[in-house]
Structures are given as C-alpha cells and as structure tokens.
Length: 420
Image (tube, one colour):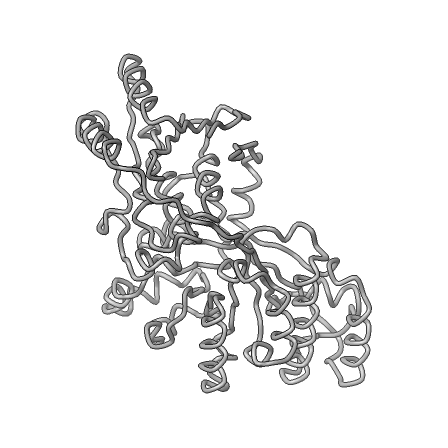
C-alpha cells in the first residue's frame, strides 16, 4: 500500500525503511524517541479497521517541530519516530487514541496504555537496540488473518445550557414559548448550531482535537428570536424548550443537513429525549457503525431529578453503542459522585478560579481523583492557561473552553495523508 505525500509528514508501509530512517537520524545526531503502538492487540477488528485512518491522522497532526515519521508494520502495529522535545505532544495524541478505541475490550478498563503494553515509548539514545529487536521479532511473525471491516459512523452534540451576563427585562411565558417553538419547527435549524472542540493537552503541547460538542447557544437564540426575554427564567418552560431543541438537533443530524458533521462529536440532550420516539427515529436513521462515535451529554441536575429514568435511558443508549457523558459537575460536588456506579464513559467538570481552594480544603480530594478514571475526565469552561496547568497536575488531559479555542486558532490546519 503506497501513500501520497501531501506534506512534510509521511507514513511508510515497508518495514525495512524504519531501520534506514533510524540510521540516518543517528548520523545527523538528532535526539529522538519512538512510540510503538501494538495495534494488533486490539480485539474489536471492525473498530480497528474503521478507525485506522483516524489513527494515522492523529499523528499526522503533530507540529512540524516533532519531525514525525510514521511506519506501519505488517501486523498493523504503528511506530512513530519523533523529536524528543515533543514528548508531551505525543502523549496528547495518546489521549485521543484512547478515545478512538475506547470501546475495545483491551482499553475499556485500562488505566495506563503503557502498563497493558499497548503503547511503549523508547528513548532512542539508550533503547535503540531494544526497539530494533522488537521490530525484528514482529517481522519474523506470520501475517495475521485478514479481517473484514465495516464502515464507522460519526455523530452529534448539543449543549443548551449556555448563559449570558446580559440583563433581560422579561421572563419567559407559555405564550412566548409557543411562539419560539413554532419558529423552530420551520426554521433552518443549522443556523442556530455552534461548535466547540474538546482537546487533549499535556504540558505545552499543541492541542489535539478529540471530538466536538455541537450545541445551541441560548444567548444567540434569544437575540435572534426574543432579545428582551430570559429563556431560562422558568425551569419548566425551559425544559420544554430544550426538548424541542433536542428534537430539531436530532433531525438535523439524522438528515445530514449540516454536511460538516462528519467527525466525532457530542450532543447535550435530556434524559426524557432519549426515552422518546424522536430518539428512536434518530437511532433508526443513524448508521450502526456510527453510534460509537456519538456522545450523549446528560446534565447532572437532569439525572438526579429522575434517577430511574436516567438508568433506563443510559442503559438503552449504551446498549445501542452510544457513549454517555455526565455534564454540569462542579468541583465541590465531584467527591460525592460515584462515577463507577453511574457507569458513564466520560464526565465533565466545570472549571472555576476557586478550583484549587476546594482541593486544598479537602485533604482526601486527591485520593478521590486518583481512584477516578482520570482519562475520562474533561475540564470544561476554561478561559485561561492556569486551568490546564491545574488539570495536568491532577492527571486530567481533556479540555474544553475559550482558551482551548484560542490555542487551536493559533495553529493553522494542515494537509495530511489519506490512505489509498
């Protein structure tokens, strides 16, 4: 299999070329490390096949400073040779790799990818011979039996719980709600949808986009429809409005009205919507292979308003292949939340300047963080670099917020390889 080179980043299929690359790098005195991914260990063959290109693209997005070269062995194992200065950036890529293969039995409950020997990093200054021996051993093994692959879908996200500091004059009434719902039923809904990326960031590395949240901005919606009304003033009327938004978002996604919805994404949705006919219709229209890339974000307040309905909705959604994320968790409530019993795939923790104050006041807080599955935690609503520093110190690697958007805007998109 040959690949066209479309940038300075390149991927080479032939095993023997890696030795030539290492030899050349050694002559040039470059300080390198190598990441070895034992892709052959993955147990879900269909998931491995459909995410193969996404895996390649993840390392294709490394910054030019990484001087990355990627080699694929005959058993599908992947080797990425890179500049040692970009060690943290590669670790960020591993966070995304975990997300891509989250549903594989090998990674589902693993705390450390290196511990299960799926990922190994070699310092080529001292471990070059060890890497060579590993590659030679793999090259002597027979080719694995070829597996058939199936297409993998992608999905959506919607968060409706955004707020604005702008003062409003009137509260939402049933009559106003009916007016808004009527407009939403016939409007081009794609104009109301916004995006925000969730990225892996470790240290000073370039953010690695993992998935996007697709959401409806309530402030923008209000400005377009009822600029002098607070749409969130009445919780019960707002719940009805959010259910209408859920329905329209699901319709937009299933009809592919927005042609750019082609990647991994999440949608903020009500528990009641998952148990509705609208969600069943959405589920029927979504390609089966696409479900595992869709994350359903459920608000904590919605979950505990009817825990039995939540358990039913979560069990149904996960059985259909969707991922479930708990959203709206504040740091002071985190220690009371038993994520294991809730059995969700991701949790979103809201950043606040008092974050560290809460942690310092609770001497057992770090014990809880260490027990939790930190790889599945997202620190959201971050507006400054301090949030990333604090998150990294706690072992959190996934981030969302305006600061992340600013970091992404500083790095122009790259042209990457497409596997032929």
